[in-house]
Length: 107
Image 1 (spheres, rainbow, N blue to C red):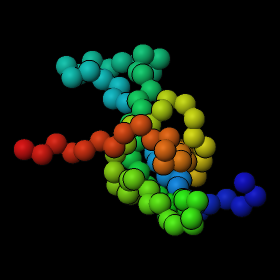
Image 2 (image 1 turned 120 degrees about the horizontal axis):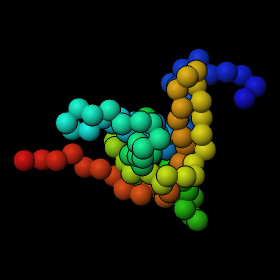
Image 3 (image 1 turned 120 degrees about the vertical axis):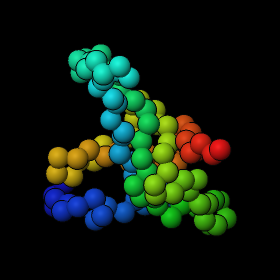
Image 4 (image 1 turned 90 degrees about the vertical axis):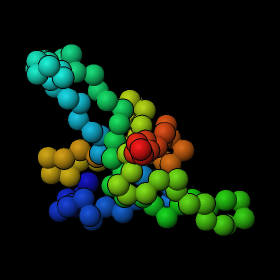
């Protein structure tokens, strides 16, 4: 990038793109045993940070993005466009590339 972003807030996704940050895998078991990094599988869960306004259909009408900032989603293990801001890593996906939205459990 020619100019560096000072914060992730400076990045606004366009059209049907969704900016996510992968949720890091737990490096220890429920019993408290720490796992080496090589055995911790890369999770495909992410938090949505920002969404674009949506794509356009063939008639020029706006198609809203299916998720909103703050949602938890499942993403494919590969793909998307990586974005690095400082030490943090983010990924841009198109809305249709997201696998699922994780709904919070309700009792």
